[in-house]
Structure formats: C-alpha cells, structure tokens
Image (cartoon, rainbow, N blue to C red; front, side, top):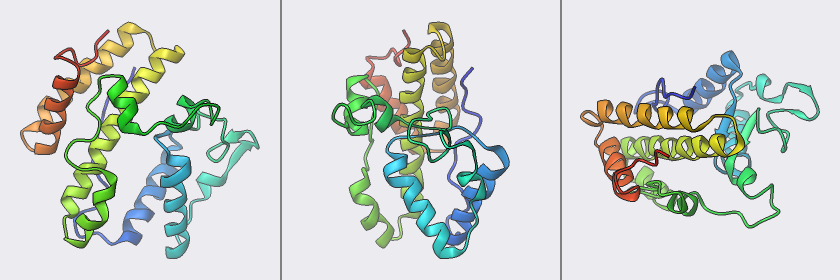
Length: 200
C-alpha cells in the first residue's frame, strides 16, 4: 500500500547547507529506502554527492551494494533507485521527457507557479520558504507519477492505486489550510483531472 506519511523539507528556514545535506544522508542511512526521483541520477544525487564531499559528509550507505548490479548507483536497479526519467524512457531508448510533459500527458498538475529555472533568483531574493514549497510539490508530482508507474508495472492493482489516490487527496485537503502551496496543487490537480483526481 502506498501512503504519504510525511512530506516536508529538511531542516528549518535558517538551516545551513551542510546541515541539510548531512540530514538527508543520515536519515536515508538509517532506513535504506527505495529512492524515487525524476532525473535524480542525472541531477539530484550528483549535486548531493558533490555538496556532501565539499562539507565532509559521509554517505557510506549510498555506495554499499549487495552486488555490482544491486545498489543505489546501478542504472538498471529501480528497486533501489527508481529514476522515473530513465525508467519511462527505457533508459534512453526513447527521448527523455520533462516531468511537466509527463504530468500533462497523465492529467496530473505538474509545476504550479514555480519551475526550476526560477529557483536561483528565489534564493537570491531570500525566498527560502517558496523554494521549500516548490520542492515539496515536485515530490508530490513525482509520487503521483510513481503511483501510475506502479500500476502500469503491476506493483499495485487498480484498487491499490485508487486507494493511494484517495489517501493523497485526503492528506492534501488536511494540509491545505496551513500550506497554501498544497491548496494550489490540489486545485491544479482537480482542474487537470476534471475533478476525478485520476482515480481509475
């Protein structure tokens, strides 16, 4: 069963980069989770690794492997790190598509208000909370894409998928009063899906 237990940016608004990077690697090092991303192998993880090396942060868990094919850095091991940009393009056999385009094809909300090209300016303007909310809604889009991928590949069935969608809508409705970005996401999703929230 798929369910959002928690969604939040790490640290606090005033946290230093070293603390954020260390927090990420320490948290994942306790859980050994399946990583799910969209272009995470090509962008997110390399950036995190470089910043971890700069700050002297250990990420031993990331580089451990059960064998050379089964680990977080193996390209064809989606049960360790499912990079949807790679998986959906059959690892480069077809053109890579941007997350927003895949979301549009599946009637998902995609980017709402901010896209990655604006993050640098937002940082320069001190809009840290806006960046955090942008990242969180990116995670929501990635999660919804992963749910559809899980249905397509048989990791869940229609009942499981619909249950996960209903839980997600309910969770967003609970959070939206405190976090306007979540209400914006929910409204965009309602519009993009003609009110069905993609339940099948």
